[in-house]
Structures are given as C-alpha cells and as structure tokens.
Length: 214
Image (tube, rainbow, N blue to C red; front, side, top):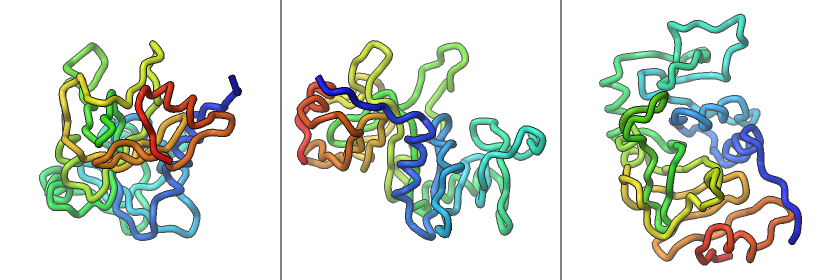
C-alpha cells in the first residue's frame, strides 16, 4: 500500500483559503475553520463575518495583542481590519438568513454523499451544547463548505451514504475539505476534486466506503 501524507490543520486551512474568491463574504465556523483567517491569499479581499456580530475580521492576534472584548463566536480573540465593524447579533443573523454570505465553512460530525450535514452536539461536557447558528448559516449562505478530518478516531468515515446523527440541514454542503481529499457533494453522489500525494482513487473509495467519481 502506498504511503500518503495527511494535511495538517494549518495545511488544510491553507487549502480551503485557496478556493476563496476576491470580494467574498465568508463566515468561518467554530473550531478548525477559524484557522483559515491566517491563510487568506495575498491580494485577494475576503470579508470575514462572525455570527456574534463582526464583519471585517483579520488574522488571529499575537498573544500580547489579544483583546477579550473583541472575540468571535467561539470566544477566541480576533483582530478587526480597517473598515471592519461590529453590531448586534440580530443584525448578524439577518445577514446570515438573508443570503448575504457567499460562503460559510463549518466543521462536521458527518456529511452525506449528497450534502446533508450533521455538525452539532447534544451537550457533552466541554462541547457546544446545541446547534447555535449552524442551521442559519448552512441554509442562508450561497455555498456551505465543510472542513474536517475524513476519518473518526476509530477509523470510520465521516463521509457517509446517510447521516446517522441529527441533521443540521439537508443537501446544503457543496464541498468537503478533509485531511486526505477534497470532495464535491452532488445530487448523484461524490466527485473528486483533489487528494493528497501518495493516495490513489481506489484507496480513497475504500476509506470512504462509497463510490467517488473522478
């Protein structure tokens, strides 16, 4: 079996950032997606949104510059670019629900081959206790992308034929960015965009246990 390299969290964040287009309004979900802010391509204007009421976030601050009065939805300190703004979360949700975001990037527990999304916890200690704004983002954004490891810690695929966890939204996910491959969700199933060096198509299908079109 060939050896392949798994993308690190930073490498995965950089891979997602590469596909963002100039002028896009983008929401980065709690957890891994927030890393994307540190890897946006130079010369491309991406306007970052946070559901707690920020538009125009920059990269993460240095430890010395952290201001805990300026945080994202995951309670992480953020920076504000020139021209950025903060506002009431009701206005923020109006942006989300009104179709004003081009892309949202969310984590997930499961994604179906046709784009159904399951990404919320029912309340284990230390976890996000409910769905939060994920439903509003998944349906309101023009494109929903998922950023996650392809496999669970038990080695099971998070990309499935049918989600067994409670759904966040149906047929909303356009792309899955994972540590091993980038996949497109379509009404006919999965389509391969790219995969890491050393991994072949047959191996990827064996890991996912689903057919993947080239």
